[in-house]
Length: 370
Ligand code: SF4
Ligand code: SF4
Image 1 (cartoon, helix red, strand yellow):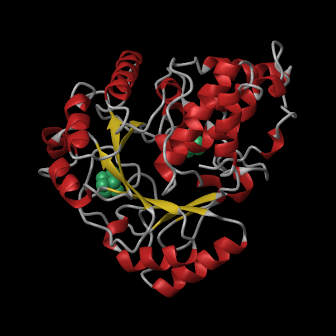
Image 2 (spheres, protein in one colour):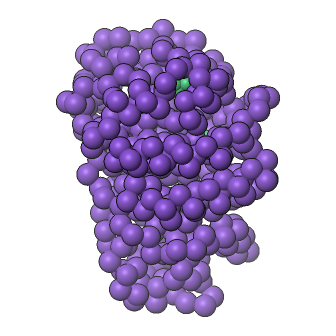
């Protein structure tokens, strides 16, 4: 994620809309208030770090165990990580995403990172409790009910154990990944999470390059996923951190890259925005520009990942200024992303209650090129 929208300061949209100006849009009090709230976070600059190549389970379709990033030697020295994070801070990184394989297996490294850059999130399978002293957001991956997790992730009582570890923990956000096979069971899972007062957001399974398993979406399953997301958002507004535009953007038949053009270095070798600042470190503290994005080895043509969207969609403010409702939808997306990723940020009610078509943003990009 990276709110890299400096080029579009108020009153200076890059692509002047035909029907109204950006200044006109900002005259709407609800929009002005929300824009003022989210723009305080435009300073966030992200990089991601694989904390270890080890994991305590093995999931079908895992992006980490695809490609060669797993073939590294873990650096397990907290002082090396502290030194890296000091250097990261010096080059302007303000938000870190700690992933891997499973970061909860290396708590001393998490402590070391948190001591240097205190804003960030950890992607975990949630089976081990991360010490409370590590004040990052913790994203707990949920791929279905316990029967499905036992089959796909080869772990028993997964949701029950995740809830035992993290219910009542203000850092925790459960991330339900919709695959082609688990759409119907999302209702029961979200109901169970809401009963335990857990926050939940949604992800869409995005196949790795060469993946041939059964989890990849079809146009039909994407449409069903969108309906399920909207229905659950409607039923559990206190527990589901999401927006109608988030649902629309992540379930379109076009991938996020095809809709919005991905700014990560893997797709944007130019030296601007995320292409310049973002790095994806492996667990031996090396990084490779050509491979750098938040979900390396994922197939860009199938990329609908929530972490990818948090950078790709938020960076495209200029493509969402054609109407007040389109900009409200973008603000809802950013508000959702901040609530999911930034500890202490509270989600506001969505401003736009209908799923605005992402193709409008694609059309705005074409207009700009003309
Ligand atoms: S828990 Fe995460 S890192 Fe571990 S195998 Fe599953 S998807 Fe991969
Ligand atoms: S996989 Fe997604 S985030 Fe990564 S480069 Fe491709 S489109 Fe961008």
